Length: 295
Image 1 (cartoon, one colour):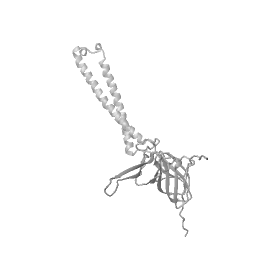
Image 2: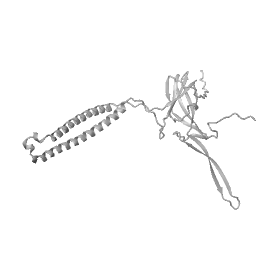
Image 3: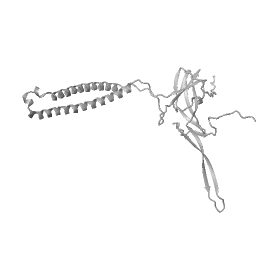
Image 4: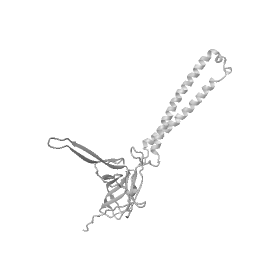
């Protein structure tokens, strides 16, 4: 029986160009395993596991911080098959497309649009009623019958007109409220059923878009792989902090002053660094070199 030799694959790949690969898109869940904090930035390493089929595939990590420097991404893979990493690309993270309306929502939308037509018809009828009352109020007294033109009847006439206009105004207010409420419900349902381009996902509390990282790979045969993906984030750093402790003198011991050195780490990447292996480095990630001066 032929034994399959485990692949001792450790590929460190720096992106040189953006290549679009075909094949399956494999979304993988990753977690932060370790972080090395430098004085000016931090290197974050995520770990993930995925079953990768034969052929061309794209391994996708979604919702990473927007500040990732694409040129610093490194990918290491180890598994039971052979794999070639072709390219690394990134794009703004997008929300999932909204699902279509359910049958109940579609029926409600039809009912709301019918109700909207009824409200519009009732509004038009009220407008005609208001115009009729206004026209009657403006009619010259000479054109009225003698019993209506009698000044003693004017007060009665104005009371009827005033009551009619008040009723029209009250009905119009209710219809306008119904039209507004119905239009708002229709707008919500139409938005749910729209096929608009999904929105870019924003970083919580930051307003900056998150990013998806896509790793194009070529795999001769299917296998299971463990991935280490590292990248640099700029909004993290550490600085030295010191504790001083004074021990008062005693009859047998002189006073003693001791200092303790600690590292104060700050980061605003939106990533959770809880329960990760955290270390610090005194070397800046942006090191400057210069040709030495020869004496």
